[in-house]
Length: 356
Image (cartoon, rainbow, N blue to C red):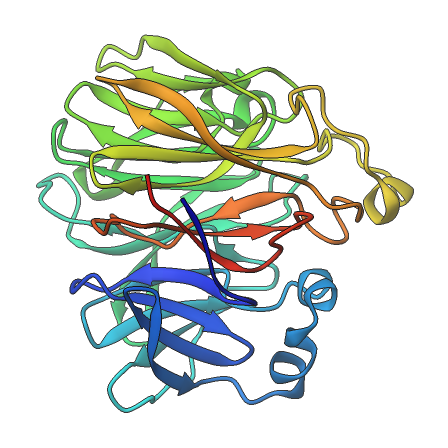
């Protein structure tokens, strides 16, 4: 059953208690069982508070929180524009923030723990528009508003970092990078980044954003708008098994109890985008099979199936954002799958709940 919970609310991250941290027009909200129990005014600019209420402007201006992670029950990391803030949920105090660099932000934060080859901590890899393949760095949180570079991919190697995943089964950290040619790669990190080994590369089947670590290997879906996309399992010997053909590229997903959820994307090809295509284009990449955002759910035991879909709206892809479903960070152990459709016809920017 689908529940339309609230308009213009973005799910950000689960707290250790299971409560859900969300964002709406300058306010951080805490939800319990789908109901708002606390509102914290955070950003006071007219842009966020007034323009952020209009969904097309919200999407056009890339407003809101782009990534988040709960450090504990009282503190949350918030990535907005190119700055990472820390918010105290008890007193509402927002830190001045850490400036990542012009055009640089995390696509997702990663908590590293319980592997002795990489120090515990919060990390992210630089995500940016980088067709020139300028150097791209990996950052580690030292303390509030203090991050340090722990590794840098040199010039000419990658466009940006898609995902970093903590693997206690194989005692390493994995980095997935994109987007094209040899930049589409999977890297194995050990010895506190003294060893960064490219184990798979130069194929779109290694271009992933949503990755889950299992005893059997790495479960991920491809983010490849111009080839057929799949949900894959990469085994410890680096062999890739196809688990499910999907109808589009995948940028977002989550773990829901013992299930894994992937959202497809309605987007263009992504290669050699002209100015006209950027502002007005609605031509799908060949890997995007239709005008629908599809949600797939399953696991290795039961397989994967589509559980929900919504049609992309009529607005241009790049200017007004791709059609996707976004999910909060962290394992969802509740009975409701929380998500937010973006750039869809019926429920654009609404917080939704799916009960199966």
